[in-house]
Length: 158
Ligand SMILES: *[C@@H]1O[C@H](CO)[C@@H](O)[C@H](O)[C@H]1NC(C)=O
Ligand SMILES: *[C@@H]1O[C@H](CO)[C@@H](O)[C@H](O)[C@H]1NC(C)=O
Ligand SMILES: *[C@@H]1O[C@H](CO)[C@@H](O)[C@H](O)[C@H]1NC(C)=O
Ligand SMILES: *[C@@H]1O[C@H](CO)[C@@H](O)[C@H](O)[C@H]1NC(C)=O
Ligand SMILES: *[C@@H]1O[C@H](CO)[C@@H](O)[C@H](O)[C@H]1NC(C)=O
Image (cartoon, rainbow, N blue to C red; front, side, top):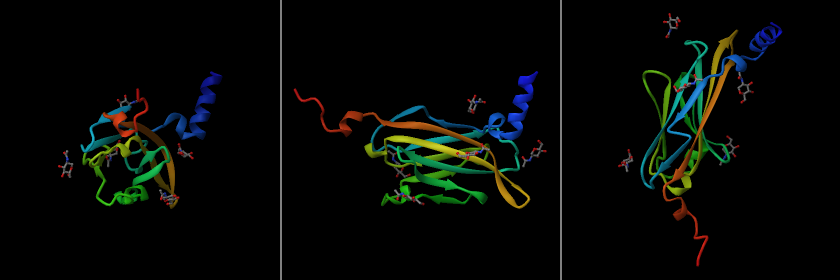
């Protein structure tokens, strides 16, 4: 019984304990791609607390958490400075009309695109004229090249 009380208190104090957004990136946890192919990663969001809330979604590229794109209030898309490094269009965020699915298309994959792609989602809602985070979720997938070793210099020369 005490446990239940503690649990309910935790729920009350921290929405994270009871209402984590379910964010899933597919394919994952590792995706193998061939150089020069295009790749689409999908970010599926479920278990929203309210269907009237707003989602803020960000795709990051790690190790250094570079921002690829952010989708904010009113679905405005802002491509981050990581995207601006590429002379040609490289990333494209596309929202599915039904369900909360956000697809990131990566054009012409190269060895330099290997790393971790994370989809971070915050569910926010307006409370007395201020926006508050009501729930959070993150999911990551690793992009690895099929010809991983051809991307590095030879290590063993006999
Ligand atoms: C989260 O969503 C994914 C994809 O929709 C689903 O496979 C998984 O079972 C869900 N996890 C939980 C804890 O509900
Ligand atoms: C990748 O996408 C671009 C732009 O949509 C297209 O021109 C190209 O043919 C695609 N490449 C492959 C390998 O499908
Ligand atoms: C939100 O959910 C309520 C009940 O759960 C439903 O009546 C309403 O139509 C939903 N609104 C939207 C925008 O989906
Ligand atoms: C990207 O922009 C942020 C600030 O918006 C800055 O802190 C960061 O250093 C920039 N990263 C790169 C790779 O330019
Ligand atoms: C959401 O995540 C941020 C930082 O990642 C954290 O500060 C905040 O407390 C989280 N909010 C909820 C409601 O989970």
